[in-house]
Length: 264
Image (cartoon, rainbow, N blue to C red; front, side, top):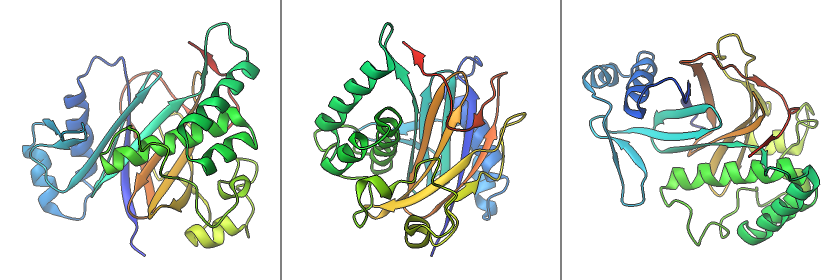
C-alpha cells in the first residue's frame, strides 16, 4: 500500500510573520528532503503566494502538485505539506468562561447530536464526551479541508468512524492504544497503531500519532499538551507518516492526554 509522508510545520502565531512567509519557509525546508529534485527548484523560485478555490481551499500559485493545508488554534499556527491533497486541523479543548467541565460536556453532547453523523454522535455520547467531541471535530474539519468542500450542510452526512466497528471501539482511547493485538491495529493499518513523529519539536516530546481509515481516506491524530490540551488531525488519501518540525517562537509542546482546559 502506498504511504504518504506529510511535513507538519508549527509556528508561534505571534512570531510577527505573515502566513505567506511561514509557508515559504516551510515548503523550502520540506522540499530539501523531497525525492524529486524538481520540487527543490520550484521551492527556490516560489514566492509563497497562495491562491484559493471557490470554497476557500488554499493552493500554491507556482508549485503545482503540492498539497497544502493550514490550521491555527491558541498560540499555534500549523501547516501541512504533501504530494497530493490533504487537510489538517488543530482543536483546542476549551470551555466558556464561568462554565464547569460538566456544563461544557453537556453542551458538546448536544452539538454532537446536532452536527455530527449519528455514529459519531454515539461515539461522543458513550465515553469521555469532552475529549471525544474534539477528536471527531478535528477529524471532520481535516476531512473537509482535504476535500475542499468546507463546513456546509453535509457536515453531518459523512462519518470519520470506520464502518465495521462499533462506536465505542473504533477509535482507540489513549489508555487503549498499547494493545498489541487490537482489531483496530490489525485491520485498519496493519502496523502498530502508534507512530512517533520522525521529527520532534525542539525541547519538546515527540508526538504520538494514531492512524485509522474511514470513508476511503486515512487519518492521523495526535494529542497535544501545551498551555492547555489540543487535538491535531491530518487527513490524506494514503496512510500518513507525519514529520513534525518546530519553526519559531518560545512556545513548546509535548504529547499526552492530561491537561487543563482553557476558558474562553
